[in-house]
Image (cartoon, rainbow, N blue to C red; front, top):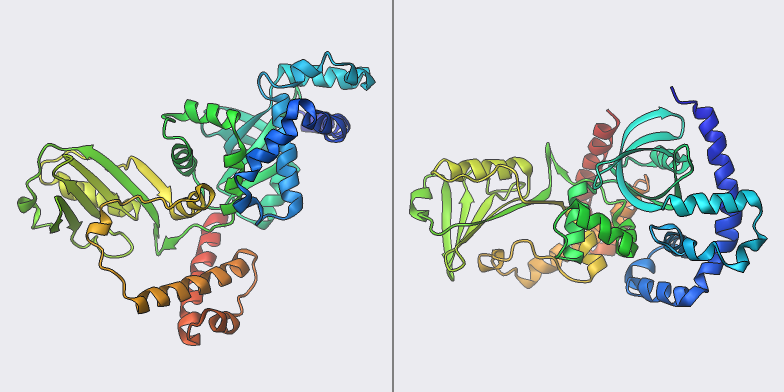
Length: 407
C-alpha cells in the first residue's frame, strides 16, 4: 500500500522547488530565448477572439503553461539550458530537480478520474494514450467542489512518486473523449487516430487550451436522451428507396433522397438518412443515440448491414465551441439545406430573441444564480410568459443533470 503522506511530502517539496526555479526564473529566461516570447504571442494572437473573453490573469497563466511546456516537453529546451552559465546560480538540489525533469518530460493529458485513493490523489486514465497514472492535484479537488466534470485537461509532470499538474486546469462539464477527437480532426483533417492526436497536442497545445471557452456548457438533455450529432457515412452503389416507404418518409431533391424514419423523425431524435445517387453515398444521422440505433435497425430491416454505432458522435456544446475557436460554421448535415424550408423574417427574429434570452440566462444558471427572468425578457424582447417557460425548462434540465452526476 502506498504511503500517501510520504508522497505528499515529495509533492510539496517539488512544488517549492518548481515555484523558485520554474515560475520565478526559467519561464522568464526561456521567454527571451530565441524569440520564444514573440512566437508565443503570435500563436496566441490567432485566438484573440477567444482569449479576450478570459480574465487577463487566465491568459497569462496559459502563456506561462505554454512556455513551461516548451521547456520540459520531450526534446524541450531544458536539455539546452542545463549547460548554460545562467543556471550556475542554482544549488545542487535545484539542478538535480532540473536534470530529473529533463529525463522525465512533461506532457498534456486529456483524462478521466478512475479512482480517488486518498485526499487530493486521483488515479487518472489518459483517454488517448490508454495509460493510467497517479495524480496529486488539490486544484482538481477544488474544482469538483464547484462543478461536475466529465473530462480533464492538464499539463502533468512526474516528481518520482506521482504526477502533478502545472498551470490552469481544464475541467469540462459536457465534453467527452469523442468531442476532443472531433475537434482535433476539424483542426487537422490528417489526424487519423489517438496516436496522431497525442502527437499533434504536443506539437501545438494552444488550440486545445482554447477549449476552456466551452468548459461550462452543460450537457443538453431531452428527458432521457442526450442531444448529440451521431453520424455515419457509407459507400452504397444503389438503393431501392421505394421499398422503404413502409418505415420511411421519402423526399427527393437534386439527386439526393432524404429518408426520415417514422416515429423517430420528430424532436429530439431527427433520425434521417441521405442517399446521394451521384456520389453513391449514404449518410445516417440522428440527434440522439437511441435515434441513431433505431435508424440503423430500420434500414437493416430491408437487408442492409449498417452498424448501430455512429462514425462521428459529438456533443452540441463541442460543435458550438469548435465553431467559435476555428471561426467557421461546422456543417455536419451538408444535405439538409436541400430540404429545409426558408424561415420567414419574423421566424428568424423570434429565434434570435429566444437565443439572446437563453444566452443571458445561462450565465446565471452556470454560476448557480437564479436568473432575473423579467429583466432578461425585457432585454431580449420576449414576452414574460414565454421567458418563464423557456428558462424554467432550462433550469429543470440543469437540476436533473446535476442530480444524475451526483448519484
